[in-house]
Amino acid sequence: MRNFISVLSILGILSFTINFAFSADTYEVDPAHSFAIFRCLNVAQANSVFVYGRFTDIKGRIVVDKDLAKSSVEITINAESLDTGVPDRDRHLRSPDFLNTRQFPTITFKSKKIEAAGKNRYRVTGDLTLHGVTRPITITVTKVGEGKNFKGMSVIGFETTFTIKRSDFGMKGLMNVAADEVTLTIAIMGIRK
Amino acid sequence: MTFFIKSALTLTLPPFIATILVLFIALSASKRSSQNLSRFLTALAIAVGYIFGHRIATGSFPLIPKSVEDWFPLLALATLMFSLLENLPKISAPIRLSLRLVLSVAAISVLLVPLATLSLPSKLAWAFGLGLMLAILWTGLDELSDKQNEAILPLSLSMAATMNSAALFISHSAKLSQLSGVLAAVLGSMFLFWLWQREWSMAKGASGVFTLLFFGINVSSMFYADLPLFSAILLWLAPLSGWIRSLPFVRNLSNWLQFALHIATCLLLSAFGVGIAIYTHGLPVGIY
Image (cartoon, rainbow over all chains, first blue to last red):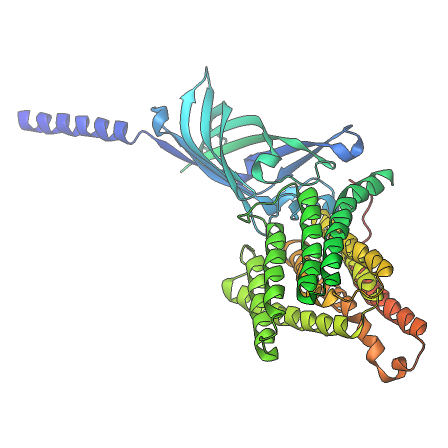
């Protein structure tokens, strides 16, 4: 009996250790509930209006660990999926004038470091690859919420807004048409695997 | 309208002036009767003028190309060096043509390599096909510039580049359209120079640089933007419109009628090219 209790205790400790060691949760980005929105000042219209658009095809993976150093995020956006509501403008934005999507079909972000920045806020440093140019950026990400959805699946959502200069990513032309600064809002929801 | 005129002038005036300045140097060289040097300087004038405009249009001139358009200044310089080589008297015609073919295939290959939407075998097939076409156009224009020394040739080339620019703009690439506009300005300055110096006949040295830039910009727009293939083919043929003057029934016409037919053919071919682009994409609906 004593042996049996010892075995049970060891198994219990082992199970706790294993559970602790593999406490990271991996979430797949759900394209249906993820958004990549951008806005850019229309210089050609006398700086009077921002053009808004979105990328409709987003993929990625979020690893959430109690130890933030082990957490990570990887996002891949299909640049061809750009949509501003005006087909002619979309084709122009996909052309070599701007994103050159036939040469650079994806926009990616890979985190390198995640730190806490307040309640449900994180400072994420990583590499943004856009138009074939990779540059490190640091963004502040807010956790919007987490829990079980109506289907019983564990979900988690994050959101961030940040500004980049397109010239930093090699898109230096037509500054008299579209401004250099582009503001991006990325809102993603992940479903636990 | 003011916006377009201002943009066009900002873009085309500096290359126009740069080309004229180098042509003056070429003229002084030709007066010292070094014709090979003068031919090279004419090609240099086109390359310098273009690179000047390219820098203004794209805001960059990286030595290590990243985007497709980054290749154009480097290809212009490579062709310039090649024109120096092929004007050497010891180079036989078959070797010259073979070298041209190699350079043409290599030029198209570097433009197509970064393309993410084609498989490697498709890229190779296109590079060989289009490289062959480029070599034919280059040789065709080279022979034409040998036969026709009048200012009408750079005028027709400038017109073809202008119409190419219009077709590229309709096919959703303002940047490539601007680059073709720069080329039109460069050839425009050559035309004015030619009007002033009637005896000028150095276009032979420049045909390589022009053809490669014209064809390279056009082909890039086909693969990276939305220029329709049939539109592109008609635009490729426009610079060769001077060959119409070699037809037996045209040869007997007066010089003025021959000029008119030359220009009309060039405009007609390019207008059909632009027309196909408009038919495919519609007219640009203003600036969005």
